[in-house]
Amino acid sequence: MFKIAWSPVYRYELPEGHRFPMAKYDLLPEQLVYEGTADESDFFIPEQMSEADILLTHTVAYLTKLHTQTLSAKEIRNIGFPMTPALVTRGKHIANGTWMCAQYAMQHGVSLNIAGGTHHAYADRGEGFCIFNDIAIAANKMKSTYPAARILIIDLDVHQGNGTAKIFEDQRDIFTLSVHGAKNYPIRKEKSDLDIDLPDGTTDAVYMDAIKKHIPDTIRQFKPDFIFYLAGVDVLATDKLGRLHLSKQGCKESDKYVLSLARNHQIPVAVTMGGGYSPRISDILDAHANTFRAAREVFFCCKG
Image 1 (tube, one colour):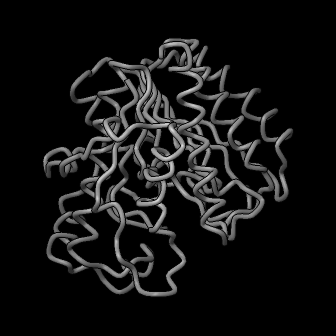
Image 2 (cartoon, rainbow, N blue to C red; image 1 turned 180 degrees about the vertical axis):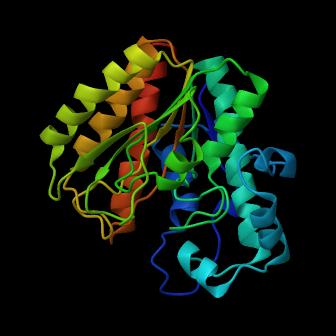
C-alpha cells in the first residue's frame, strides 16, 4: 500500500517574493495523481503532533516561545519565516506526518511525506526554514515506543543536517549520516556519525560513487531496524541555494539506490522531501515526483 502524508496546512501563505517554494506542497500531489504515480486514496491527512511527543525532542522553553509567539527578532531571522501561530501549527502537522509515515512503513515497507525533512531545527531553536525537527521527533517517538529499535537517518539534502546531528550526538542507537556540499549552509557544521562532504560542482557519477561507498557499509555495520530518508532535491545543478551539479536523473538514481538498499535489507523506510530551490517550480516538482516514482518502482512495481 502506497501511503503519502499531505495536509492543506502544508502550503503556508508567505509574503510575496519569499524564496521558499510553498506552492510545491499543493502542486506535487496533483502531479502525482495526474500521472498515475499515486491515487487520491493513497493520501492521508495527519493531525497535529502532541505536545508530549514534541517534548521528547524539543525543550519546554523553546516550545513555550513558539506557543506564546515570543521568539526574539534574531531567532525569527534565523528561522527565515515570518512567525505566526499558523506556522507553528503547520510544523506540528508535518512532524506527525513523518511519524505516521514511519508507522505505515513498518506495515508496507515505505511511506512518504510530501513535506518534512526539517533537519536544521535544534532542540532549543529553529534555523534555515525549520521550526520543528520532524525526523528527530519521529525517531524519538519510535524509540519511546520501541526502545530496542536501531534507527538510521540518511540525509541527502545538499545542506548538512546540523540540528539532527546535534540532537542525536549522544544516542548510540540512532545513527546520523549526512551527504552534503562542503561549502553549503550551514557554515558551522555539527558532527554527524558520518559526514560525507562533497566539493562544489559534484556531478552524478561522483555523487553515486560516494553514497555507494558509504551507505551499504553503514547498513552492514550499524544493522538498523528502521531508516528515515531525507530526499532533498537541492542537489540539482539548477538549485539557487545548492552548490552541487546533479541532474534530475542522477537525483532519481540516488533515491532509487537508497530505497533499493532498504527493500533488499527488509528495512522499513520513511521518506521526507527536504529542500528544493530551483528557479523553475517545474524542476522542483519533477525532481520531487521522481522520489515517489522511484518508491513505487522499487516497492510496488510487481504488486499491482
